[in-house]
Each structure stands twice: as C-alpha cells, then as structure tokens.
Amino acid sequence: MASVPSLASNVQQRLADALSAALPEAGSADPLLRRSDRADFQANGILALAKRLKGNPRELAAKVVDAIGTSDLLREIEVSGPGFLNITVSDEAITRTLAARAADDRLGVPYAQSPGTTVIDYAQPNVAKEMHVGHLRSAVIGAAMVEILEFTGEKVIRRHHIGDWGTQFGMLIQYLIEHPHELDHKEGEKVSGEEAMSSLNRLYKASRALFDSDEDFKTRSRDRVVALQAGEPQTLELWQRFVDESKIYFYSVFSLLDMEIRDPDVVGESGYNDMLEETCRILEESGVAVRSEGALCVFFDDVLGQDGKPTPLIVKKSNGGYGYAATDLSAIRDRVRNLGADTLLYVVDARQSLHFRMVFETARRAGWLNDEVTAVQLAFGTVLGKDGKPFKTREGETVRLVDLLDEAVERATAVVHEKAGKVGLSEQEIVENGQYVGIGAIKYADLSTSAVRDYKFDLDQMVSLNGDTSVYLQYAYARIRSIIRKAGGTEPVAHPELPLAPAERALGLHLDRFGETVAEVASSYEPHKLAAYLYQLASHLTTFYDQCQVLSDDNPPEVVENRLFLVDLTARTLQRGMALLGIRTPERL
Ligand code: ARG
Image (cartoon, rainbow, N blue to C red; front, side, top):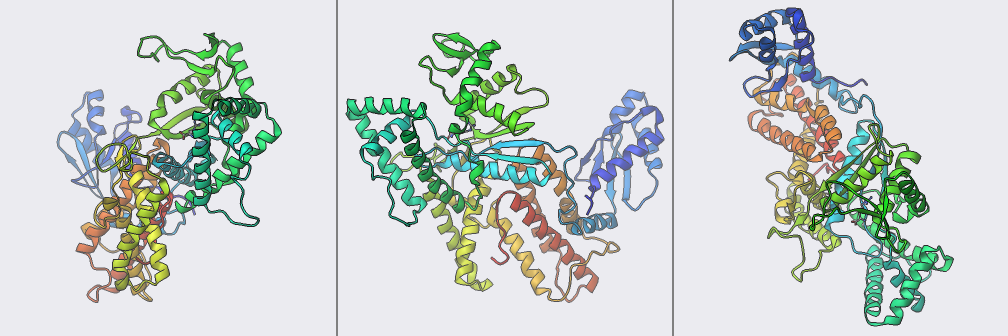
C-alpha cells in the first residue's frame, strides 16, 4: 500500500496552489499552516506576504479564498482577524483519509524520503559490574529510537559499547588465577543472571579487598594488566570468562526488560583494541593531537578547566595506555568506514556530554566526521528518587536495576489482579499482564519526559490508572478490543457519507497526525513526543466515549460500523505507537 498524505499536507498543498494562482507575483509563498482551536487549521502566511507585496492582507486573503474554490476536502474557509485564514476540513475528507490509513499495514505512514544508515550506541553496561538506572535509560531510549528509525525506513545498526576493558581487569584476573574455581559452574548447570552477577560481585569484592590490603597482590595485578594488554593467551582466556559471565547477567536483565539484544551487536571497548595505535598515529601525524607533558592530547579553545587552562582530551596517556577517548575515536572510524554510517547516535548520560563534544570535535578535525557524516549525543538526565536526589537505596548504595524491575512487576500485578475478576483473566494472563504493565510503566515513565531532563522514579505514579502512564494507554487499547469483541459479527466499516460529532472529528484529526509525529520524532530524536501523542490519543478516545456511544441500539447500523472503524483504527495506532516505544498492549486487561 502507498503512504497516505495527511489532511494537513493536503490542505497545505491546496493553499499553496491557491496562493500562486491568486497572486502569481508572490512566487512560491508558504501559507504557514498551523493547527488551531477555532477551526481545524489556521494559515498565517498571508500577513507576511501582504507586507512583502505592500497589499492589504484581508483583501489578499479574500482573493486566496476565491481561488481555492470548492472541493471535497474543505468544508469552510474564512478570513479572520488581520488576514488569517481559518480552515475547516470536511467530515468526509477526514473519514476517507482514515479509511486509507486503515487499509495500510503501516497506517499510511510514509517512509523517509532519503533514508540513511544510523549506528545507535545504546544499552552499554560494564562487565563485572551491576547495572543501574542509568543503564536502564540508555537501553529504553535507545531501543525506542531503533524501532522508530527502522519504521521510517532508516537502516539501523545497533552497537552495545559495553565497558569490557581497562585496568580493573588486572585485579580480577589475577584473583581468579589465584582462586581458580571461583567462577566455575557444575557441568551442564544453567546459570541464572542473578547467580552470574552474584559470583561476579563476590569476586569483585574479594579481589578489591586483597588489592587494597596486599601490596604484592597489587603488583601482581598491575603486571596482569600488562599481560592482558599484550594479549597473553591465558590472561585473555580468563578475561573472556568475565565477559561471558557478565553477558549471562546482562541478557537476563534485558530479557526482563522485554528487549532483544543480539550478540553480534555487542561490540565493547575491547573490540577496538586493534585500531587504537593507528587512531593515535593518524591524529598525531595530522597535527590534530599534540604531545603535552608526555601525553598525546587534543586541545579546544572553549574547553577550560577550573584554573582557566585548556583541558585536553587525552588520547594516549603518558604511560602509553589508551583510555575511553581513544576507544571512542576508533569506534567512530569503524562505524563510518566499515559500517557505512552517515549518522552516529549515542544514547548516553548527559554527564558524559563534555567527553562526546571533545570526541566529536576531534573526529571532525580529523575528517572522520563532516557535513555528510554527523554524530549526535542523545543525552539523558539522571534518575532521581522521590526526594528529588539521585536515586539511591536507604543505605546510600546505587539501586540494583533488577530489584526495581521486580518491584514494578509486583505492583503492576497487584493492579491487574484487582481488575482481573471483572475481565475474567486467567492466572497466566494475570502474570503476563503484570509483566507487560510493570515493564511498560518503567519504560513509559522514562520515555514520556524529555530525555535531557532528570526524572523522579515513583512507582506509585508509574502504575497509576489515571494520568499520563502506560497502563492508562494499555487500558485504552484493551477497552477498544473488548468493544470489538462485543460487537460480535459487526465489522468496522468507514462511512464517509456520515456527519461526524465533534469528539469523532477531534479523534479523527488526531489519528491523522500519527505519521507526522513519527517523522518528527525520528528526526529530532525525541521519543517523548510520541509518548505525548499517544497520551493525547487516549484522551481524545476518553472524550469520544463520553460523548458517543459505539454499541447502542439507538444507533443506525452504519453509525455503529463507522464508530467501530474509528476505535479500531485508534487501537491499531495505539498498538503501533506503543510497540515503537517497546511497550506491549495486552488484548484483555
Ligand atoms: N559503558 C559506559 C557507561 O556505563 C557507557 C558507554 C557509552 N558509549 C560510548 N561509546 N562511550 O558509562
């Protein structure tokens, strides 16, 4: 099926044509169409045009109205105020457009005109470390951007830049060498994510304690780092065991989050080791990086430390070691050259913004990034506790992600349980829905505020049935599905000949904006605007229910069919939109 142009774009086109017919001297002027409260749309472009042509705006506006003539599209168009146009589209045009959307799997949403290749760097926890809420945000926002971009036809390559390299591994590996059975599992035993993390934790704590108390162990650990960096086989093999054990844990958390992470997309810091030397050499030879106090550095005029002196990006330390920056610069080269990316999107904590600013600027100077290949950080804020402070346990420790997820599912299950009797849900459905509602609540809370803003993690609010929550949207969906089941044999059918009630028009016009919303979200990297759209959609639906009965014996059959058609398209739009955010919509709730 072909994509369906929105009513707004049809009206815009019609106005632009009328403008150039009525005022050939205007050239191609933009009618500046806006949504409006007084009518469906308002066009403000004539004011500026009149100024330019030194004419009377109201007279020009009247000329344009004459030139538009009659059509099926517009019901009313009037000049208002100093020379605006108020435009009301016909009920028939609304229903016809929606029918075209309903006939398409993609709800008429067009593909992007010139899709490219985006590498998204998201869901990047660190090996041998517990995941925390920051990792949650990256995963949730990143996964939504993957879905949204793919839906617009963009080629998306996922990269999970996990922290799997660094000096801390010296201590861990050395400890494992000296306590060889600490990570062993029984033959054929299946290790749970929880178990994997707890052995890693145990090992981490034990080796840390030894490292801090035993000078000889410290020395042996440091030598181990050298062996690791030199690629000594036994050391590498042990390092790999830590990575593998951690992956068991990561994957278990991601699966709890109902999120698919594929192994080949996990390319951690270690994946760029072979490129580091070359990256530094290119930077040094091109003069982008310079030696300073023994280190290889890149300087920026606008990045100064507290002492007023420039703070450089260090690509190679004075001891010869490479750090986070060299890895990220190498990753850029790989993603641009080998993966063919034209956009690099980094879903990373706002606290790393300075790092990325410096890395991107360095890559630009080196020519790896340019007008054709750009990099963006989709920066997100901190998750706060109810008290407005960074989220911590009462003991002041970072909150374990798994505990949060478990608690959300537990609360959600209670909410589902309460209503389950009325809907007649089976035990299994209650368990499943509890998961969909709980995980959905967490994802939606994260996605419904602008990413850069900090947000409060408040489970009570997140699973509330009223308000801007995922469960409110999930109920809206389930309620429609229930109506459709109750309708029995009556199918949803569009009837463009029927006049629409105000609540039907409002719902219909909003449904028609889905494609535009998706396109905007895809290009601005602002998933919260999709969440807002869906919330408004559910609100329009609520008003519609208040004012219009769907299955009422008082309704003529074609009204029932048309209303079923409207709610069915609403359900499909909700479902599609929620899926783009990574949230499930159960059929019965
Ligand atoms: N592992 C890092 C952390 O936990 C995030 C990695 C972000 N991605 C990147 N390319 N640097 O903070």
